[in-house]
Length: 201
Image (tube, rainbow, N blue to C red):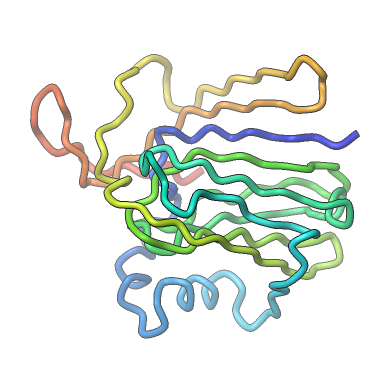
């Protein structure tokens, strides 16, 4: 049975690697050249065959603070993806998430809600069980997602995890509370900047 996982990151910057942000933005080849070198060195990246895996995202997002991004896996990919990273090149901190899926898991779809700061490529890089890398990307036009105010709801604590299964039993929604703050956001109650805070693990 194939499975779908939904990761709701409404409070997220689309970010887990703040230490690389400033260098990534100023690299001669752009953010991706630095990210690629750091995470994958000279390893070959497959970039064709949308039927194996593809990234679905709006060309122009109506809500840059909660942009939907979906990763779809075809029959040839199901059970063969063991790890995956999602990148948003031009975010202040471009690594959205690193997922250890585990070999043999028949996942068909992973959905995110992420902040997108400006026009950028959104990339998924999957490592298969035989050690190969596959990358797919989509272009998203956005403005100001990382400086948008945080969600009004303050309920729950960082690290709270909630699960909800679909009625048909074929998908699982996983909500993880991990509000990242970019340092660009303003507290609507006080008018003061919210100090930067990144969830690293």
